[in-house]
Length: 274
Image (cartoon, rainbow, N blue to C red; front, top):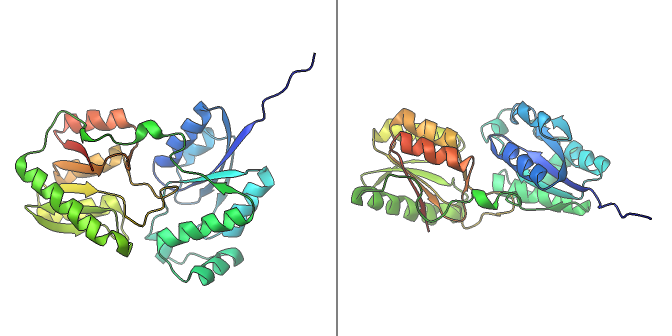
């Protein structure tokens, strides 16, 4: 009797920084996938090597090596998980030939457009770019209060200010996060990233600032999903921020249960908004 072997599911991941790539890989493994990762030196957590079937390390800007690595392994579906520090993009990154060609084509250094450009280059080679949330649907924030603490009227007003500011800026490729205090936006995420923006906002606004994170209207949700985690809350604790408001159904919470426990422990309001 002949048995039919189920084809092996191979998933590629372009691994950036933070916990996101690790969580994505764990999700893929729970779904019986073989995972091949292209990781970035100085960005990706080395712990990923113990989770994937094979990992290749490249420097930021080595687009040709990134694509050839997936092709050599027979990868047909790839997700982009985790970002690349925008600060590092201004510190002498040396592009390979394909990377130079990509920048010449898109004529922009905006991260959104670069990621779309990389996706197009992969698709030219027959590699489908799938959503980075493919195995992480349970990690999306629900709407409403997510922990034990509820926002006060003043905090709700600051959340509204933050949401309005982000919506007004969203088409301009500005960051996904603002920090608000008493109706005033005291910090806007720029090239330094979310944690540094929270730190700066806390220093300027003082204790009790409200942190708001929403997706941009121009965002490609295949690979550019707003993400928060325990590190976000730990940064907030350091500056005595009181509220983290995130977009419901569009923001991924890394280690969601741990985040909620940490928010409760430090009496931080954690709320999903629409």
